Figure 1 (spheres, rainbow, N blue to C red):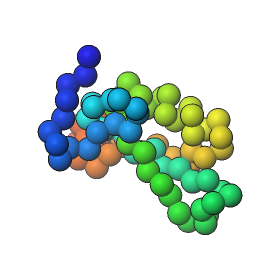
Figure 2: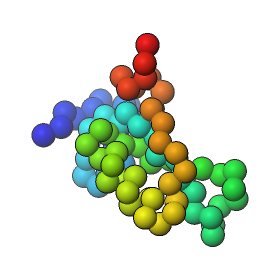
Figure 3: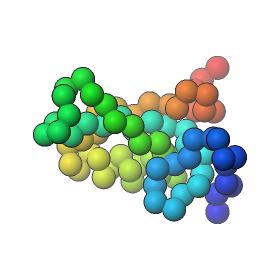
Length: 75
């Protein structure tokens, strides 16, 4: 079970997940968006792969980066 986050903390974009987000999944639908536009889903460590796989299977995933301020950033 994941720990809920404070109301103002970024949370994972996975349905029903309330865990703190630590990654940004930057994606783009080439049929709808210009090449320089990126949409962002947030992911916790538990959902980073499944959300990324969903986007990648459609050819939408462009990059995965640590969420600024998250503990995944190296000091």
